[in-house]
Length: 77
Image (cartoon, rainbow, N blue to C red):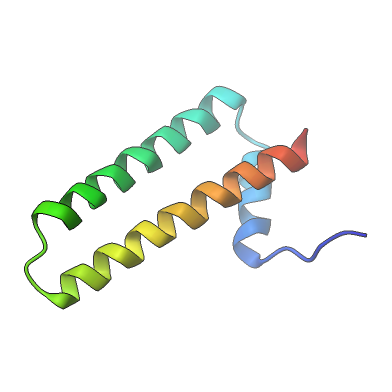
């Protein structure tokens, strides 16, 4: 039984088919780097609650994107 994919997953699946494994790994590396930069900003540069919530949201979005890429890669294999 197939699971229903969210629109972002459908878009990623379509785009993922156009890229080779090295390209996907480079994209994932770039997302990890941005996530780490956001974490460092969260630890050292947050001055107020709005910045804290914004940084937490960005980290959650990066995690969700990385998980979607990983899931789609597994589905392609």
